[in-house]
Length: 527
Image (cartoon, rainbow, N blue to C red):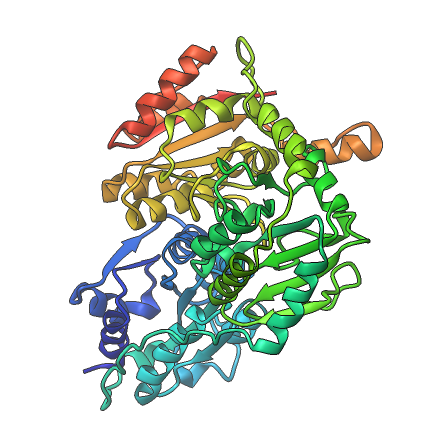
């Protein structure tokens, strides 16, 4: 077989079902190898959209999503989505084509040092400069992308190598490496701190969701009565229906969650990265910190744990729940019960009587229309802040927020990937700014027969930037936009479009669109 055939056979061995990307002449061999395989190549409208699709696939499934681009501008267009996956700890394998090896030592058409360019945003990346290293390189790319903490890897395939004969076979995929249980001495130190605490608080991060630690985490919460507050990326690890949930961290709108952080005398952080939320905003100067994660904590003055448990997160929580149950270690709820009540009241408030709405007005109606297992994917902007803080989440990995790189434009292509990855209904929520960055991927979604709902919050502004400018200076500049008629835009793709102007119309639009098997767009005017 050719090297391109071998690479695709390796993808099949890894269980890859879809490769998202754009064609290019330097990948001709690879494209025809994909055509003759069990892997479905999905031509997208932009490489960034392809990378976001692979990113969200990895985030939802834990299996590396795969994206493909040609050399030069194709590779650089791919870069943002690859970086987003890397900082969000989402497993992704990027593959780029390259010109022939004989011309890479000199200046030539579209040739860039792509491997060097991808170095800062990948766990590992390499050029496949020999057909007989393809099998090992693909296996390594998937192993490292999916290994905790996951992230992005990259392989570059020069066009002349792609056509070479290969004498090796794909390596078998293996079970993922599981982390060890916590060592007894470290766990004893945690137990000692728990025994001394009166107001402990659990902070759930991305790792609690990513490592499937929700069940033991919920057992620990139920056994001990400890409250839990999540980062934007940890939503759903503890259900927001649970009376112990203080929902989501924020230094602004949810003063109650911040107040609980300040009152706590022990913080048990579970799968938390400081990229998710700056601990300098926690007001936790008097609290001891126990860090439970698969890697040691980043060195940061505002986050300097007393104990670090570097081990399997789920096993660590199981051991703690068992010990707390055996010893009767349980904590009172009086210190945070009122805070929880205020948060719930704020989240459940009634929407405005008519448009324009606020995003927070809209979210209770959207929550009503979605089942607990349905997936809401948020783009980046002012609406993301409202979704993170005010959209109750009941199951892990059902509210997907990009908060590492926090790149605009992820929602529409991400919704496509989510629709392919899960059986539940999918909603992609975005602002008018982020929507038009990758709105062309609606065509990709309709071509594939996808069925998900796009909710576009329209304020003709890069609203989050305006808000920050106005807070700092009293005015804003460079943020105003104009938005086309999005219902007509949706209908041009032959999908349903809605523009509700009252709460009843909004409720009806959400109920109809979310339950539909087809694509739909709901344009929501907000202020």
